[in-house]
Length: 508
Image 1 (tube, rainbow, N blue to C red):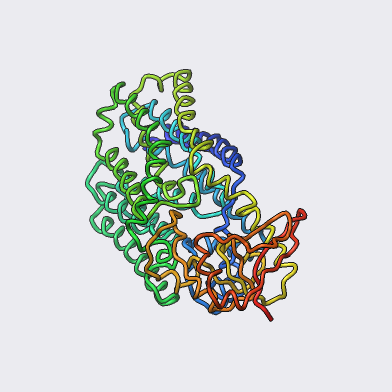
Image 2: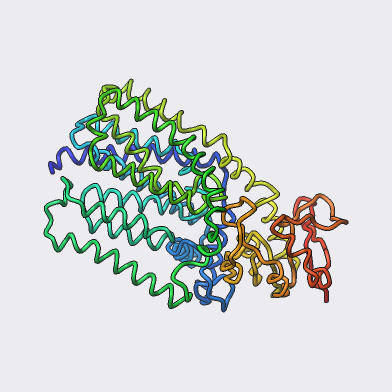
C-alpha cells in the first residue's frame, strides 16, 4: 500500500468519524434515556468487586445478565470508584467512535474501484449511522448494545478482507458480549474463509485455519466455563424470554415490520436511486450481496425470538451499520459524490429520511414510557425510598429487577424469571404481548416469603392508596394467592416529590 495516499485517507476517515460521533452523541442526548436493565449488570459487577462472584444475590449462581464483557467492564469502573452508568456511557461512546472509523474501509472493500467517490461514500456511511436513532439511543442507554455492534462491524471488516484471524478475534468478542454472539461470529468467519480478492486471500492455508481454531477455542472455553460456573450451557435470560414460538412470532412480526418501515424502506429507496445511477455492478459483487444477506438473517432471528420490549430496535442495532454502509457503497457510482455540493445534499436527504424513527413510532414511544414515573422514573423514587426507610437485610419481590435491587442491595426475587431459574424454565403460553416478560409463577414468589412485594409494576401515587393496588395482568396470580392474602398487608412509604410508594409487607 502506498502510505503517501493511505495516511491522508486514514486521517480524513478519523476526522469524519469524529464529526459523525459528535452528531451521534447529540442525537443520543435527545432521548435522555437509560434502561432499568443496566442496573442488573451493575449489581452483578458490584457483587463481583465485593468478592461475592458473578451473582445477583450472594450465594446464588444464576446468569441473569446477557453481557459478560460489559459486566466485567462495569466491575473495572466500580473498582476504580467510577459511577457505572457514566463509565459505561463513556466506553460505549468510544466504541461508537471506533465503529464509525471502520466504515470508510468497509466501503472501499465493497467498492474497491470507486476511487475518490469511495472516500465520499465512506463519509456518507458515517453520517447515515449518526442518523439512526437506534444506534444513538442505545449508545447512551446503559447497556452493551453499541459494543456488540462495534465488534460486529470489526468482524464484518475481517470478512470483507478475507482475514479469518481478524474475523475470529472479533467473533470471540461477540461471543463474550451477547448470547447471540456465536451466530454472528460464525457467519462472519465463514464469510472470511470464502475465496475472494481480499487482502489476505493469498495467506498460507495454516493461517486460514487459525481463524476457526481461535473462534472454536474461544467459544468452547467460554461455554465450558459457563456450564461449570452456572450449571447451564445457555444463560438463564434465554430460558426466561423464549419457549413459545407462536407467542414470540406475535411480537416479533410487528417488531420486524416497524424496522422495515422506518429503516428498511428509506434505505431501499436510496438503493433504488443508486441503481438508477448505475450501481448494478456494485450490487452484483458477492460481498455486497452477503452484507445484505447477513442483515436479512439477523432480521429473521430478531423476529423469531420475539423482538424486544425495551425500545428503539435494540436487537437490530448490530446490523444497522452493515446495512447503511452497504447502501452507501452503492453510491460510489453516483456523480453526485464527485462534487462537494451535491454530495452534501445527498447526505442531508438520506439523513433526514432515517430520522423519523427517532421521533415517532412504537419503539420511540417505548423509550418515552420507560422514562416516565410509571416505569424507571418511579422505580428510582421507590428504590431510593426503600434503601433509606426499610430495615437492612430486607428481602423483596418485584417485576423490574434493575434499579430497585441495585439501590437497596436487598435479596431479590423477580416475577419474570430473569434471575429465577424456576420461573425461567416454566413452559407457558405467551399471552401478554410483552416480549421477554411473559413467564411468571405467583405461587412460587409467595412461597419464598419475601418481606416486601411490589405490585402494580411498582405503584407510585400522589396520595396513599386506600384500595388494593391494581395489579398488572402478569401479577394477578400473586394477589389472588390465598397465602398472599393471609400473610401480607398493604402499606405505603413516602418518596421524593411528596408522592407515595404503595407496596405489600409480610405481616409480623
